[in-house]
Image 1 (cartoon, one colour):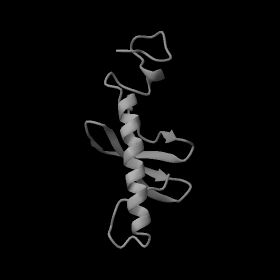
Image 2 (cartoon, helix red, strand yellow; image 1 turned 30 degrees about the vertical axis):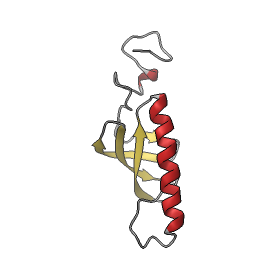
Image 3 (cartoon, one colour; image 1 turned 90 degrees about the horizontal axis):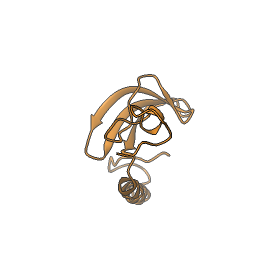
Image 4 (cartoon, one colour; image 1 turned 60 degrees about the vertical axis):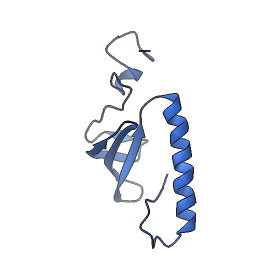
Amino acid sequence: MMLMGTDNPKLINFGFDNDTQEYNVVMHEHLAYRYEVVKKLGKGSFGNVIRVFDHKLKEFVALKILKNKKRLYKQGLVEAKLVETLNRADPEDKKNIIRKFD
């Protein structure tokens, strides 16, 4: 296991990640000066999905946070591109497909 950014063996990625390189969900934490963590919705093999309040759009949205691994980052880029393609094919949201905002 590689420790990033710290000499403390208990802290991984400055304490933002756990030992499996997943984001440590902290209630009411603010992410990117925009999203406030409200609830953890689910956990999968690629990371976590959390419910957040988007202070810019003034609404609740789901935020998917992948594990801190290079191969998952690359897979996340592919997934984001796929969602963008689906969103362009359904601009009026008639098919009830997940929407990518940011």
